[in-house]
Amino acid sequence: MPEKMNWKECTEQGIITKTVPDEERAAQTLKMANLRLEFTKMDITALTIYAWLLISEKSLRI
Image (tube, rainbow, N blue to C red; front, side):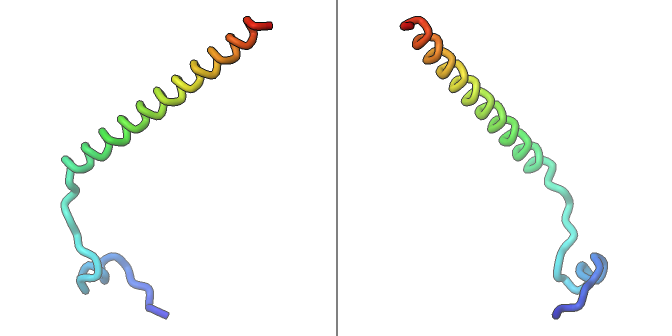
């Protein structure tokens, strides 16, 4: 079983590397997540309205 190592040992041995955060990529990822959330909300809203219209239509027939 491999021996446990702390972060400092891992970076010293080159197992992991320190990097500077990519702010542009983080901003793009956040923007994409927000767009997906908006799309999901719209999709659910559209389905809810469609279901409501179907129920209303059935109620009018009775």
